[in-house]
Length: 256
Image (tube, rainbow, N blue to C red; front, side):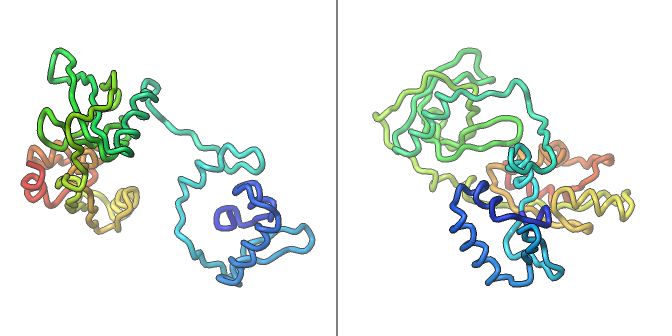
């Protein structure tokens, strides 16, 4: 809080973390012992304010902090509005069944409607992760039908039932999930230095470019998000793209 707003009251900690005033005072004392110059107490209004020599000592996530505090009744920060798909809604029963399957290590039988098959049919899966790719939630799972680890969309699942007739297949065997590959990115050479800097800053890379390490199983989703999936899979660079992938051939080989 002192990092974002520049000030903090003991009561803020009590409300934020549901702790007693005594615990809040103890936590403040411990923080000051780690960073004595980071904040000072104003005796007039009992408010801690950021010191002139302030230096953060913990990792910060601005977007997460704003999200957590934008609806606070006590001291809301700037409101945060998220653009989300109004039609997206996963079934609580499906999510619950997937979680139970994983926690108990019991395979799950589901009815699944694939877009490559006209009719839904039952499949037995062993899910080891849920993945939110920004537009939908899917399970990374062993699929007994295809004898492989694949992604299955949760909204296409129905009628979940435990299936103890087959053994559990653990995610440790999912090679594509456990391997990471690098996606090398640079700004489009046609951009000005200022444009290149902000374009790369949006994806957390320096102006000259850099690499993003990603699970091999998730690489296509990231490329799709960056607008690069077509150029990487097709092998033809899009001259209008703001970002350019410079290791396309290596990625094509890794993603076969």
